[in-house]
Image 1 (cartoon, rainbow, N blue to C red):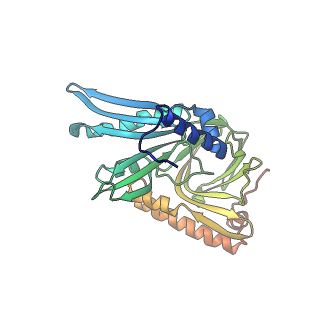
Image 2 (cartoon, one colour; image 1 turned 45 degrees about the vertical axis):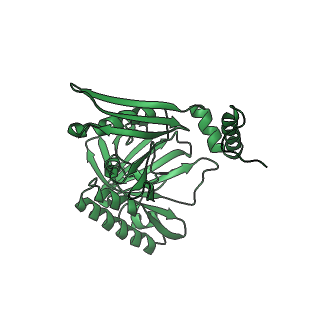
Image 3 (tube, one colour; image 1 turned 90 degrees about the horizontal axis):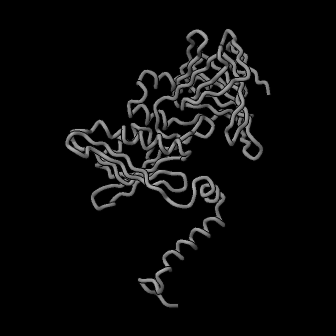
Amino acid sequence: MRFTDSPDRPGDIDALRGHIRADSLERSAAVREALERFGDDPRSITEFAYDDHGLAGGLVGTVSYGWLTIGALWVAEERRGIGSSLVERAEARVREAGCDGIIVRALDFQAPRFFQRMGFRPSGAVAGRPAGATEITLVKRLGVDSAIDDGALHPPKRETFDTAAMTNTDPKGIERPVDVYREEPFGLYLARPSDHRRFWYVESWLLPERYLRATMFHFRPGHERDQGAYVDVARVWRDGHLWHTEDWYLDLVEHPGRPVELTDVDELLEASAAGLIGAKDAETAIRIATEASSSISVHGHSVAAWLASVGAPISWRR
């Protein structure tokens, strides 16, 4: 065996990369799927801003495997407000391309809170890189939904339900047809198909007096989960034929025969600390979630049994 710090042949570096690629393709279905969707070659993404004095700011990134990695973001001192516009423009481009997320690595003195306010979530940190500083990795997943949301920091998500037009507009502004709307004294029921890769149908109850939205996801074969109702803590209100929800982060996941699971407490706390949700609303969300969790346990860990006991007898079609 012979070791050297330089290749014997000019093509050996490309050969090394080829071996790594082949090994990744063999071992990972996720890599194969990403290459099929987005191609093999990384591509650059750039955004620039100019004023009367010249370059005022810019962003440079690379897209590979369906993710944008922001390599550089700079804004002139007197133009600090345009940083969010540069990121938003780049995000809009990769969203349109169907990308899955954005990664940025920032040193602790490079305003990581700026990225958090834009919906990025800290995903790791390396102290002492470089010495005396900390490198923070922040991630923003694109196109997450209530069934697979990984807790990325974001403003409260809002949805609109138009009972006259028979549509449901999700937090990303995508309008979907609804099969059934049914109004009851205690709330609104809806049922609609889904084009999500993990579930094919969705049923929901909007319960304004309870500050809750209860949903039943009908999963595709191979994506089944050990759960019943998925309950979002949310503000629910009605304006004529339009119903609205504002998600307050906390979720209660029903597991048949077992205690309900309270999730995303960390997400609510981070959103509150970032000023994305007011202190009063955050306090209300915690109260609603804890009271509901306790009441569901008293009623045999059944969401439907508890709601029926308080005058909201929900049911599911499927």
